[in-house]
Image 1 (cartoon, rainbow, N blue to C red):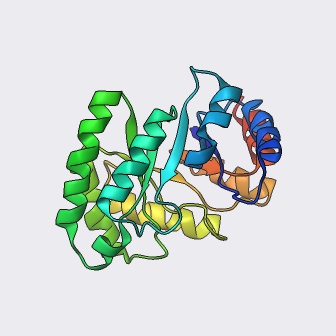
Image 2: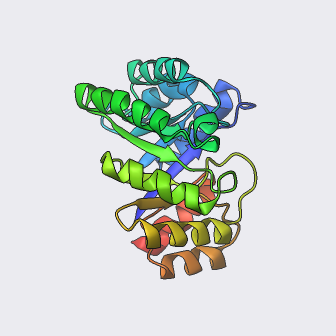
Image 3: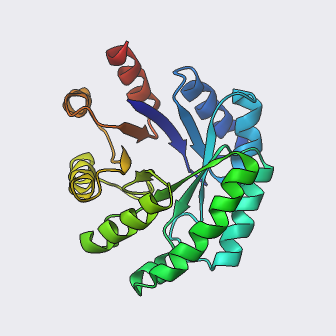
Length: 216
C-alpha cells in the first residue's frame, strides 16, 4: 500500500511547517506533498532522494492553462518529483474535454523532459460520476494512472471517499486511486486496511504512526 503525507496549511509559519514535516518524515511515507511555496523547505528536510509532490492550482482549479503551466514550471524548478493537478474546473464543468486533452499533451512533454510524474485530483464532491468516469478514461489513455478523489480541502468522510473510489475503479479499472478522506480512529484504519486499497494520503502524523506499525 502507498502511504503519503500532505500538509497544505497556509496558516503555518515556516518553523511550524518544518516541525510537522520532520515528524512526518520519521515514518518515511512514500511521498510528502506540500504547497509549491514550501517545496524548498521540504527538500531541505527530506534530502534529494525522497519523493516530493505539490498540488497545482489548489484548491479550486480555476486558473487558465498558461497560469497552470507557470505553476508547474515553478514546482519543477523547486524540486518537485510529482505534480498533482487539480482538474481544470471551468473546462470540466462545461464538458470541454478538449481543454483537458490540450493540457495533458503539454504536461506529458514536461514529464518526459524532466523525469517527473503527474497525477490528478478529481474532487468527487464537485463533479458527477459520469463526468469523473469520462475524465479518468481520458487520463488513463494518456498514461496518467494515479488519481486522488479529493484535494484535502475541507472535511471529507473516508467512507464517502472510498465509495467514490470503488465506483470509479469499477468503470475505469486501469486507474489507481490514493484515498484522501479524513481518518479519525484506529478502527477506521483497520477497516481501510481490510479493503486492501491502493493507497492512502493523510495529513495526520498519528495516522502515519499507526499505519506503519500495522503494516510492518
